[in-house]
Image (cartoon, rainbow, N blue to C red; front, side, top):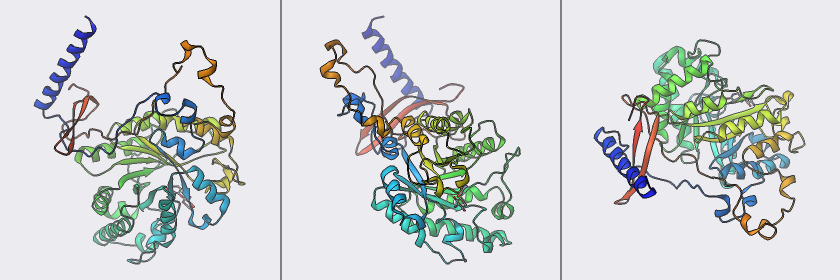
Length: 429
Ligand code: XIL
């Protein structure tokens, strides 16, 4: 078969697939706003030489693949210039470390204090950094007046009011909220942990919280966040996975899963990338939200970053603090900067895994390939792809457990973007 025949056959097939998908009602015919276009260009064609495509800070380098690199920030440290200099140089996402927790924002019922979090949020936004909101419903750092509530109706209205008031205050300012934090139990049960929310409202409290959150700020991404859910075979991971699969199949609003990633010296479990990919396949973003690793071994950091880089819907990485001395695990020196604010070896490993060049190497002036190479070598010897994270993705529903997508087509018609595609379940198109 010649090339022309091949192409004709491919086009006939594509048309047939589209018709078939349409007849089966499988086309994702929802009208979607396409916020940008994924780019896939050789580095040399992107307007700059391949070497300059590599950035020298974590945030800028993560941005080259459409991701972010963030840090947990404490309001009380913003006046420390070593701290704030690193924050502004390296990071393009910020999570208030404690300032958005219930015991700070609603210490007594109905009386809200957003002062400390506002300090962090307004500072970040004015510098072009985005914000993760952490966290709305959590059993810890919860004031006594909430944990001592004794009836379901009171607690439900208190929880909804807390979510609504806090999200309304930050409407339009927060990229993603950890709506519910750490609701699953450790160990082999795969069930929710006991808490005042679980005990009075039952399993449905998580769904209730997400539904309330969606109404409060429809534009914010809504995440479930937890620790020890990085190893695919763990019962806790499986429990969270079942919940997210249930939510996406029933249309309960959820956009992302946060993996805290508080690791020991060994770093992530071998299955971490599989875990990220499996969650992403449910149609949610995945994010590494609180990364720190005991003693900060370079390999452990590199493996963590690579797991994210290898999963298209891994939107970004946040480290839980800036310098070792800022860490809640300060005794384990788990971060990327030492107490003096100097870059540790794990910093370079992280930047490299993000695709960047550690500063020391970047300063060496490269030989000019154009002048020194033979004409035959004038094509680049390697190509790099850069792309945003996914802009659209199919959603499974009760009757379609989507395993793959074929021949996506984007059509602009009458001022709207339409996206058509065939979807496949594991049993067929
Ligand atoms: C930690 C903070 O870093 C500490 O300053 C605070 O004393 C306790 O909480 N999981 C989470 C984070 O979701 O909110 C926790 O942060 C660390 C574990």
